Length: 181
Image (tube, rainbow, N blue to C red; front, side, top):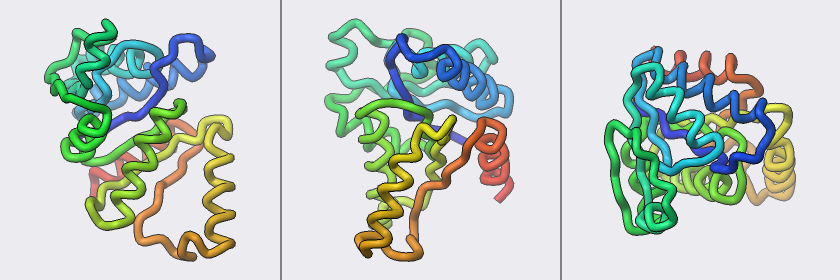
């Protein structure tokens, strides 16, 4: 299974969040899956991809030329897709991946997450998206969705919706279950 991971590229975040990247990258590789990620250096992106490579996994990087120009190209990818823009990066990652995982991140992570959710909502794909709500990181987003549902901006039962998990163990159980079906 090709698992796209969206996450922070910042190095200054707390170490416990960076360890999530280590553990997820290792799990992906050891379970015979392929990591699909943004192809850049920094933060959870580096930690997840480096851990997958260290565990002898396959890593597909999808990197915009602007990131390369900024000197942030990861050099350890098994396969590299160089794209012209962030929009093309999102589309390529959506096309290549079998499912999506959101670790904690910032605006870029939220943009990628909402892009997958919106495109799934209109039927462009039927691939699951898992959001790791580690230590309540995404509680505000869940509350916002509940508010939108209460005001009927979202349907009571969404045809496509993210799957929230609270731990890496719960995430890997969901991913394992996804492969079995």
